[in-house]
Length: 72
Image (cartoon, rainbow, N blue to C red):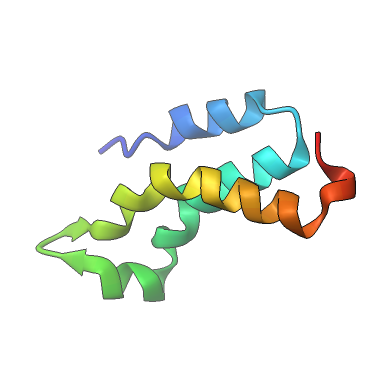
C-alpha cells in the first residue's frame, strides 16, 4: 500500500529553507509515531492524517515566531 510518503518526501526535498523542511517533515510524520498512531486509529484509519495539511502552516508560523532572525 502506497501511503504517499514518496511524494511527500519529494516535496520536502524541494523545500529550500530549513524551517520549511522541518515543518513539512513534522506535519507529515507526527501521527505515525506508534503511541500516537494507536491513540488516533479508528477502524484502521489514522485520524491524524487529516491534520497533516492543516498543521504545516501552523508549524511554520511557530518556527518563524520562535526565531525571527532566521526567517527567510
